Length: 173
Image 1 (cartoon, rainbow, N blue to C red):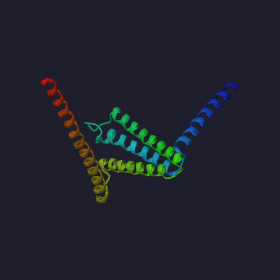
Image 2 (image 1 turned 90 degrees about the horizontal axis):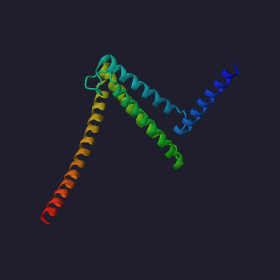
Image 3 (image 1 turned 120 degrees about the vertical axis):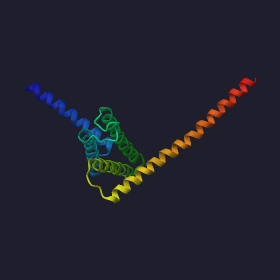
Image 4 (image 1 turned 135 degrees about the vertical axis):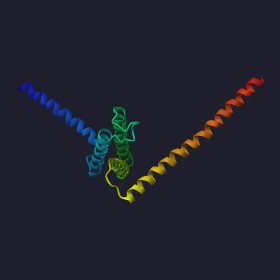
């Protein structure tokens, strides 16, 4: 019996230490942080339902459930939490209290959009205003990626032409 109590004490101590460390790293258990975690869980669950039951996931070629896509989703969610941790540390370093909140609100909106998209793919009727807003955001994201790719291409062409010029100069010698 004594041994069980010691084991119980050790487990509870470790859990308490881990909890207090996470509390300090993420800036506490605030309503906005709790809401972000809830949205993240709902998004992940609706993504699993979308792929597993409806077979309409846009994350896989077949639309079906794939472990690789699930792991990628979890990795992204971990990155979101790292951003919250970084924002908390910035707030502490700068003596402010709004950077973490702004980051959390931004990611909450992103999760909410993803939940709404999942619901739409499941057949839940989405109001036209929300559909247009999602489409607008999706198009802006596509435009941003396209312009970034176009900016990279001239740089690659310039470096290739510089290499050709150097090669031609070397062959002339």
